Amino acid sequence: MSGPSSVAAMKKVVQQVRLEAGLNPVKVSQAAEDLKQFCLQNAQHDPLLTGVSSNPFRPQKVCSFL
Image (cartoon, rainbow, N blue to C red; front, side, top):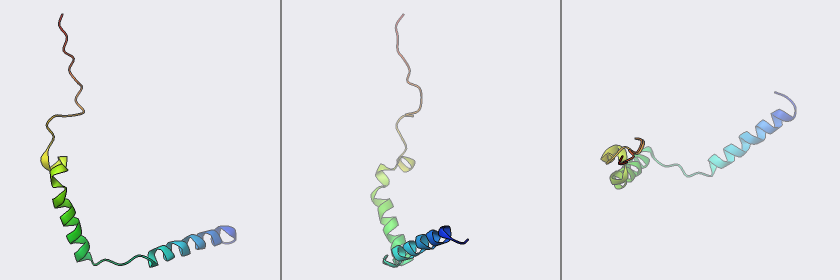
């Protein structure tokens, strides 16, 4: 790469590094504990865990009397 595209790419890299440098690192063990707590707190609202009462994608039956 050379020229303006190289300069633009390097500016993008520098901007990303500055953004990442401003973040506070979190220990993996703490992140895992936070994720576990979030999952436990929201488990009652998760349809993959609780199931659904009816299939929302099933075509609705039309009731008609002839």
